[in-house]
Image (tube, rainbow, N blue to C red; front, top):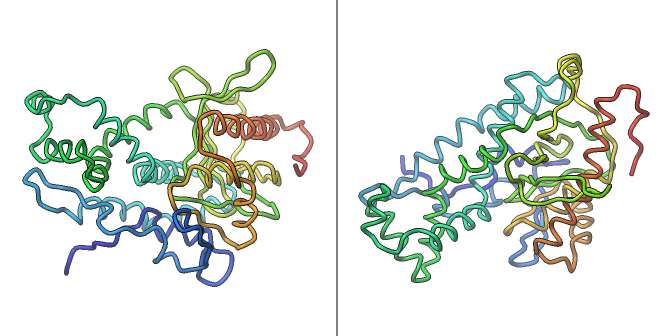
Length: 325
């Protein structure tokens, strides 16, 4: 059996939970500006995207793909459990692990990691070897510095472990729960679907920024078209945390719209949605918006306002039901 060359950025098992009817998701390709419906097997696929290089310079197409597949197999069972409203330890831990793995599959974050290594790693090859960089890594850095795009992609994959550790460290104090959505529009996803940032209140107003340690960090990951994984470093009181098991049912259109808009704006190339209408509305919302820090943090602040209100209402049982926004 030959090793697989076609690698998914978004697992097929994950994409299937964004299907509204039939067996297709709706896709927008940002590089071609085309929108179409197709089966998940054809979506967000790249040749050798997860192919690692061995220390000897050979191709390893199996190790990373096999590692990902172990988590993908159990994903449908996790979503089925979370849809019951009961968040078991196993189901939430699997959802969190799946989210962390999706981070290192993000082309945007792999490119960021590659750029940082190319820019800040020692120029001297002997110094690189002192840090434990294999010959193949030294060669990749040399090729990347000369403008080799494929080498930059490979560096992003080779440094996935460091990327994962960095993200896990940033999110280490986040407590997660799921929110089940009952809204006329669905969640969508993308090839960069994990949103996390810091938020703080200054002079009575919320303000978002980079997720530095010791700040309040919010995290959002669409698990399915109607289930959102939500994380917050500010935890509820102990007695509330352990007295409530069912997940929240929320009908906030504003929450869905804001998560969708950030996901679409920050996607590298691929956006997926359950329906053409969901996709069209989100694309209209980000039309003429550029991917710049000030714009993105402004959008994150608006998302934070909605999410914190919904979170407060969830833990305060005396609050009125969440109204449509």
